[in-house]
Image 1 (cartoon, helix red, strand yellow):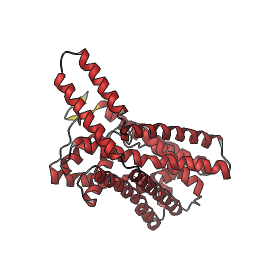
Image 2: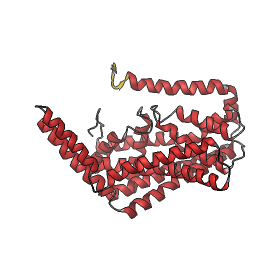
Image 3: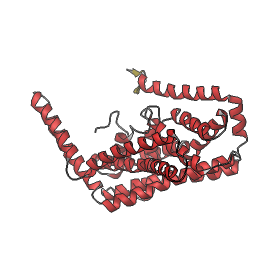
Image 4: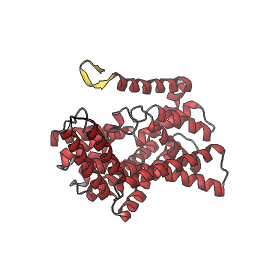
Length: 347
């Protein structure tokens, strides 16, 4: 069901935006709005400006990963255009009610349109980049848990988190291997499914044949993206700099709030709160701030108002400014290439 005058927004999508607003309202209510505003007012503006600059640098690291995969797949785009495409994708992912996922098909369409490349290649570049950029959150978490196990005190909660992160990394790594490997396991499975459908229906033969051709092209392009293991290793290692920038940004946010930052809690807050972006709210908003605030109260003896202030300020350094930049860059791409994303991008 779609809203009158807004056929591209369904009631279900708007429902997740409503959930986001309710989560924020609940956090403000329990944190005491007045205390929250007082905490915001006490922030040192100049120090916070440094945090914003450092936090935004993490987005440029992820844009660099996009540029690497563009080159690997033969997509012609200058560094500046890649940055604009990345920020546009950041914006689209964040307004899609699927957490940090869901905007990739539309973004692939825009990349294909503005760089004059095939859709399947653009999709392979975007999905491959997203997988690489997700790796550091889990490797850092596992590394932190291992460090505490060997040299510090490991509590039950963090031990469980370490196992979960390891499991996610193994499953995700297995999926990435199947996408990038030349053995064609996923491609054969998809082609087998389409062939089975073709045998059971008496219509749509042309459509199914077209889908099979698309699967073959997409499989070949994913294999090309992951063909060079040294390229993948260098790109994955480089993407870890984004998380380093976020940890430094949160450190400076704490200084701006006149809180005493300690490395281990900052390290885990940055990495563990990211899991909340997997929620179906737009960009993980609401759930992210709730998870961040809870982790703050877990690691520090602070009230909820202070924890929520830190969460909001941290998002102002690493997330929300990128949305504004992404909206503006999307407009520039629209003017250049007359981009008009489809209602339902083809996969």
